[in-house]
Amino acid sequence: MTAHSPSEISYSAHAARWGLMFITALFVLLPFWITVLGGFKTQGELSANPLGLPKVWQTEAYTDILVSPKTWHMLGNSVLITGFTVALVLILASMLAFTFSHIKFAGRNYLYSYVILGMMFPGATAILPLFIKIRDLGLLDTYAGVILPQVAFGLAMSVLLFRTFFEQLPKDLFEAALVDGCGYGRFFWRIVIPLSQPILATVGVFVLVQSWNNYIFPLIMLNDQSVYPWPLGLMEFRGQYGAEWNRILAYITITILPAVVFFLFAQKYIVAGLTGGAVKG
Amino acid sequence: MSAQILSSHRTPWTQRLNAWFYRHNQGGRLTTLVLFLPPALTVFTLFVILPISESGLYSFFRWNGFTELSEGGRFVGLRNFAQMLQHDVFHVAVWNTLKIVLISLVIQLPLAMAVALAVASKSRINNLFRLIFFLPFILADVVAGLIWRFIYDGGTGLVAAVTNLFNLEAFYPLADADWAFNAILVVVIWKYFGYHMMIYIAGLQGISDDMIEAAKLDGASPWKIITKVKLPLIWPAIRLSIFFSVIGALQFFEMAMPLVQSGGPGGSAHTIVTYLYEFGIVRTRVGFGSAVAVVLFLACAVFAFTYQRYVMRQRD
Image (cartoon, rainbow over all chains, first blue to last red; front, top):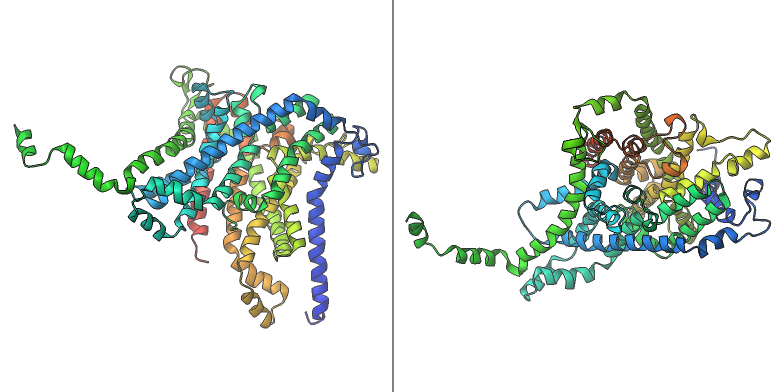
């Protein structure tokens, strides 16, 4: 300590800080860089020129994927599955959380603990009986066969987030509404929901990313390629093209591009949603 | 006769029910409960709680799942569990799962903390770095796995580029029993450290500037401020991120799928869930797979309850 002047210390601290930031950023970004450019290279150029720009920009790998109807069909499947999952979780979880936060009834806290229990157990603990149940319901190879388990496993965390938010709403609000003859139902739809836009966005984004990226439920429940969402399609594409890495890298780039753009636009909600309320704001 | 006497000095039951209903249904309370509770609870019970319980039941049977349990299933007691506990690949899977926890505690979380400290203060450039560090986390696990599958490819990937450059023999880390799982651990850090960083940043931003100023006035060095002021103050964020790391390790599966098939060379890269998938689902052994699920369930439950009891509840 005494050997260094304060400015010397802060100089080395600054250097260490920037060094750490740049090296870590390099570690994070390098795989993205290689992936995006890889799709523009020929197979032979991949290992000969891993980091540089392509000598000749080959767009074939990208255009082949973009003109294939299969790609768009798969994207449609993903949009359907994710859309229904998000909508159902938002409706079911907000209604359940509202009863937990605003209506007193016997056993309320037990029921709440029962639902929160779902947060601790990964889908894998239920996957075999879940497969049998979905099969017995005749829902294998259907969108519903993926949506229902996704909704069920999305509920616990969503109810937690909704309940925390609802309980912070001013109590006078409800008393005033009740005096004015507004019942619980109307209070929920007309007052609570319009006030809950931030939490709806947070939970919505959380469920959306989970569902969009989910692989295990579609893997188990879907066999028919015509209903594959994109993570399954990606793995199937990889199986089909084996070691043609330039094609696979192009495919990866096309699938992550919307995610990255979406992330840049909705980063506030994504960070709040994905860190599950651990991060405020 | 007696019923007549009983009811004669009471109002008819329909009226009493009406009164009760009126009293309890103020503001549509009962109606709302009846409409709001069942849908979510039914879905949750049917597709989360019931299947988890059924795993417990199935784990005592030898059953392929294609017939009714009562017809095709054979009760085998604890034999599935005995078989699993004696299987050396299962030992590898448990050890690898623990390795993810260890690597999180020793490398991932300290890295996340270091970058969190570096970029916590609000500025444009810090915000940019935060976005970069968080970027891998928004990718699907299968995508992260596939990108690194290419990097580790000894024929065309980055590893090939390095071995070509130095004229070394081609090297396939994911096909090498000593390297495969360590290679996966690198991807785990790459994908998840940004998530933990965000949790820490939220904690750091909650520390009031006065506290830091006071420490500075007392002559505390920057290092002392970090270790004696900041870290103790964000302990709630740290224990939360440890909780998520362990739960994440216990359910680690999707990222492994594109990286290694069937648990990697000689099953050396199995984790508990990939083991469940390989030996329960792929081989359609519902009973055996359910036994693995029960062990996984117990691991989650024991960890979650002890951690809640002894770490999360403690006073800061």
